[in-house]
Length: 186
Ligand code: NI
Image 1 (cartoon, rainbow, N blue to C red):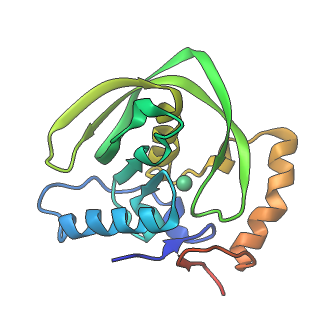
Image 2: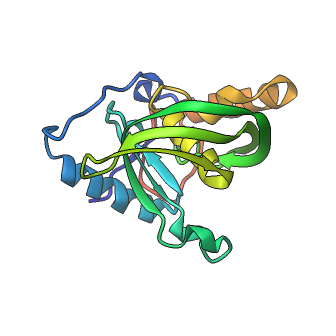
């Protein structure tokens, strides 16, 4: 089932999420709904708060960019209770980011290039690994959502100032998206 994506201004996007266990109600269905929703909106990642659920879970699909980035062929993962455990501060990278909850906007964001993450997969198997490149960026973006953070929070100076009026428009519901959304106001 395709779910509406909660857009900027919705309080759920600013809430700290709760960890979940295997007994969380309808977990399999929720994960499947998130995959359906991500495929329909053609994003690379989706965090549970973006579909209105304040739980610590996200999905990432990099298979959809594997034509240009063959190393990500088949990369579709579910992350339950993920955390960034360590950050390699020696190298940062700047790249354009967007977010399904902020339709029509994008901006360059600087993030550490290499991080260590821990998470459970959909079978509640534990993982602990170092990642880099685009995957490290997408993970940081998605896991930020689980702490109530969106990418525009990382902007500084003029970029931040220029973004502010655009964010206000989103809160007012003045935007268009070619996928199902749930804005604060219509
Ligand atoms: Ni996002």
